[in-house]
Image (cartoon, helix red, strand yellow):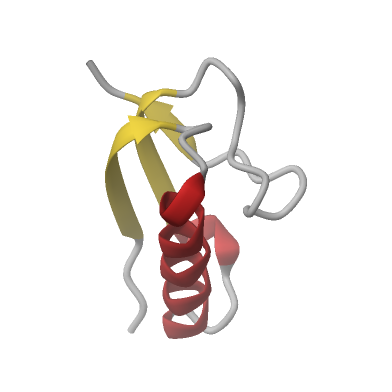
Amino acid sequence: MYAPALFVIPYASDAGYAIDSYIRMFFRAASRLNDGDQMRVHFSFRSAASGPPTVLPAGFSNIVQFD
């Protein structure tokens, strides 16, 4: 059985630096645990105004913003 994964990142989606490495690692791990189903992986950022991080696949849209 697979389960959706939600990663809450307390920074803006364009924070960069070491955060990008963690986002890439979380995405890969969650995708593999869900048998490659990227639609079960979700990210939440303090601000997503600049769009998704560049380390996520092109067209990845499972991103929400929190206040």
